[in-house]
Image 1: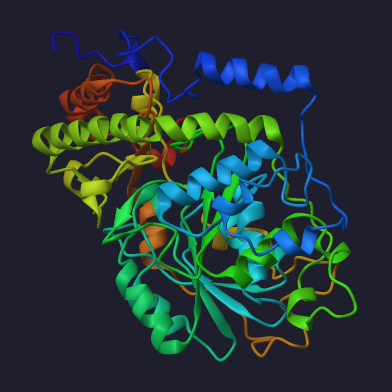
Image 2: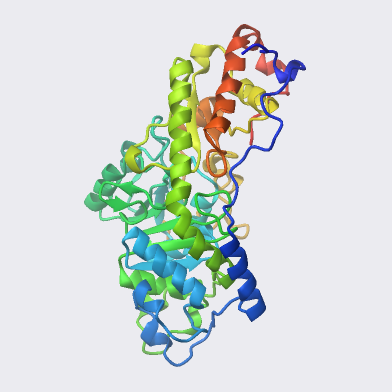
Length: 463
């Protein structure tokens, strides 16, 4: 590169045009949504008991699609079609569309019977909703460290975190990576724990012979921007278990209004006044986007593979890609790396600041580790009485603590670099711009390595 003068010093940036993954919108989506608008079909959920409701509650998703009624407790034609197509694509009997993956996680946790006094193990390195969904289900998140190579829950740490109050494990497939999911499943089986897969970033990706999200008792996907498939907002809960599916359907739609005096306690428990319904307009976008998901995943895979190959080839001494445990089917939400400041002598935050100045967006981790939220640090969620941590049903009451989590802190505070812009409409040429950004950094290595990060507030991590 002839001109290696950094943009932070007045040089020309690598990029001056917008650089991000974007929603994939087709004329068919626009026309279909417009048609629904003209029809006035914004939603077709009814949140009360009408004739036939109990008869349809346990139907598989492909059967639900065939219901003739436009207005049902299970939603309208577009919602039910999306659920049926999702089930078919992922080889699962039941898919339940919701208005967000956060809502989906809450419904999933409550549907498997988790509640006050129960603990759910999860990693701290994720978007806040992974842990807060546990609290929103009136349960306790117990943080266990990540594996520094996969960025996912460490099986050893998860096993050590199990207590008499543990009822479930939530593996989080960060950047669409399963991590050591087989080992997590083995631990859950031996300890008789439920498994809730946070597969928000992992649609249509195989781990072994099954799709991510379908290995555990229940899995949850996200449809919000900028995930692999984007409807704006939305989520999908999947399960092979009819009782879990029924419970999720109740929790999604004012479920307390449906059971009667003859209903079992198991059916009534946790089925209280939530409204997690997905509207027809967003579901219709999802129906069409799902047809394009193989192509959209292919774009991500090709960009990711090229970017990793180039960065490792050029700068392998300084940068290590996230270790992927299902590389054949991997189509990442984000391309994740570890930057080795010790080898490069350049602090990760400086690298990020320089890249951003060159027009290349980069993330330095999550906004903060979930375990660092005041909610958990102060053990104060509901009211002013430290609930649910001080719940009289919680056997760990007064003993709740957050472990050291050295791997998660190291990744978050010192090493993580993530690139969100690997999806459509980005191309190999765009990936070359990321590589050019790193080339400029290494061309100015001596200068950048002499910057004292402690004496400046210029280099602040973030997105």
